[in-house]
Length: 559
Image (cartoon, rainbow, N blue to C red; front, side, top):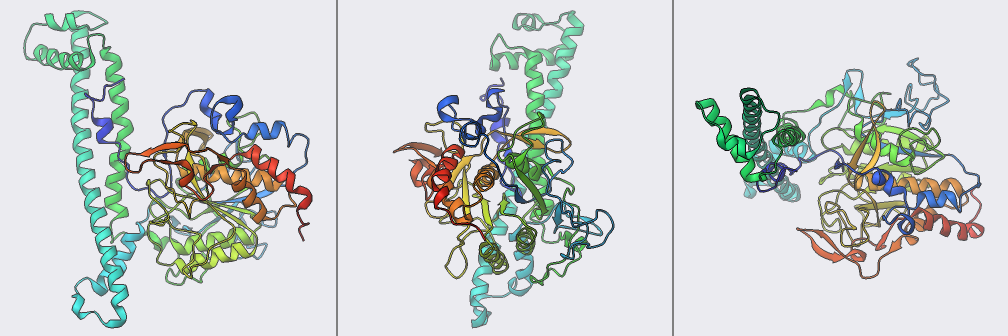
């Protein structure tokens, strides 16, 4: 491996640009860990969900009911080998005829709907919410002194100052990071080219297949020889005399390539996310200012970048019976794809409509693996959340990946309404890892004794990816669908339980770790695991179905 003291690139480039969803790339896992989140703590010695144990014991031979789970995300590859048979299908709609056959307001919505697409294409990139608010308020207050602000506008002016400060800091930071990242990458590109040339020159000139420190010490010749000698000596001095320069060069190339995307993220954040002049909304074709408008968008739920949504969908319900790829958590589920999350911040209007679409078209659970710092149209989202609550639809939301306390710094959408009340059927989820020691909690995961309800696996999760591929991913984005999958499992096998009871089952049955101290992160320090969520627990499917079974005879019949 490339030593940290030599290759600072891994350190310098590890910062990740803001993303539209709560996920990040995971490092490789062993074959044993590929499905660790499905496994049992006692049997397999990893802090998984005990999904396979639940199926092998309590659920074995038990009938189940199909549950529809809406995935509000970037899009889902509904043709994926592990998802195509578990996709929700609107049987009342005739595909491709351009007619709203079922009169639900959305033509050709076979697998769901996209609120960020239209006749002119799909929104791929969008700005961050702070940028949109900056662009909206700058013409009003940008050149206005505080003393000139009318009394009725004082509150909005104070809000403008917060937006301006947040936007300015974020843009300047990303501009700085983009430049630093590009400069560092350029330096290591140059070093790698020099190293490659040196290796090729020495092997050719001296007719060797292996380069050793002893050989390098004996090199004599002109400028090219001296240059090759210098760079090879540098490698051996820093990596040790046993270093394999060919392997080292290959590792360096991998480091450079893996971090090239990081630099692009910073550059794109400046070009798009924090660019107040960038506005792709026209291709959607709606009246954006009208938050009551509902019927816009397109039937293209795959979109242009369905990676994140496809990964989320796989965790919930990848086909368990086809002997391909992976096994999802729920074995009798249908995935309803709702595209509303671009590469940038999702818009409140789209999220509100996505929630309503899910409810009106039969979803029993809604997974929301996204979030942002600002919510200017929160009223619209609150209204939709209240609607879902009233219809008995369970909403599950990723807590976020900023190592923040959500009790203090909200990650929108939240279950807390502006009127001070809270959604009943909402579960906020933090991310855990596989160890039962101080490493149990993912260092990136947000937390909150009041707002976050429970933790679930969200580190090195192996799931479906576009074009019949699979990937390893991290983030509360995957702790959320892990929870949605267990919720669907309980609903499916215990259909007499109410949605409120299902929520209670998941939270009350969560595994507790008495006085376990976890090293949350350098920023947060060492804290009690029980203080990171309202339940102080870790989700477990086996414990959940065991509790559900005990409640079964007490549950009222659904009407």
